[in-house]
Image (tube, rainbow, N blue to C red; front, side, top):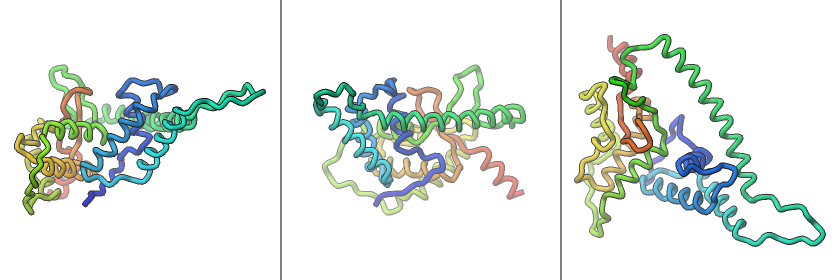
Length: 249
């Protein structure tokens, strides 16, 4: 049964395309559709493996990419007496990406202004912590989290035998376990790999992934990463803890 999760910051298909373009260091004006389509479809398959309910807009974009890819494979039509060049099949997609990118950068600019004021009137206990001149931690999105779990799943060999899953293995219980461990570690947080034991099955890892998504949706945790190749770290949301302590007082 698929698990539907709706995050306020859940990225859509255009975000995924921009993520792939940035990750592969591609020119947005000259997108290699074959490569992007392949990687996009791999993400769709991975989302299904992680029991995420795929929104229709993701499937529509997959169909659009496949259509563009097939159209680019066809030979250009030659029209006698006409010198007008046929429009690049990627043109409309590029226009959409550029327009969306502008809106996204504008939103990030507004967010940066909020952070400037937060730095002026700040709480010393706020995350992330940058002691010792270490590289600043950056909050990660859904696609970085999916990639991290893909790497973990790839390390687990496929089992031909039936996997027996305990009845008590639920997303809610994993959420409770993660919060309890984060409360113990405090500001140090936990690495993503620290939440996963070597003996865990694929099903258990998927449940952990869904638990992290739900905790992020509830704003109980924050996910940070020092760099593209660094492991993701999970922290307790200090704002939520402050609100909870105030209510209890």
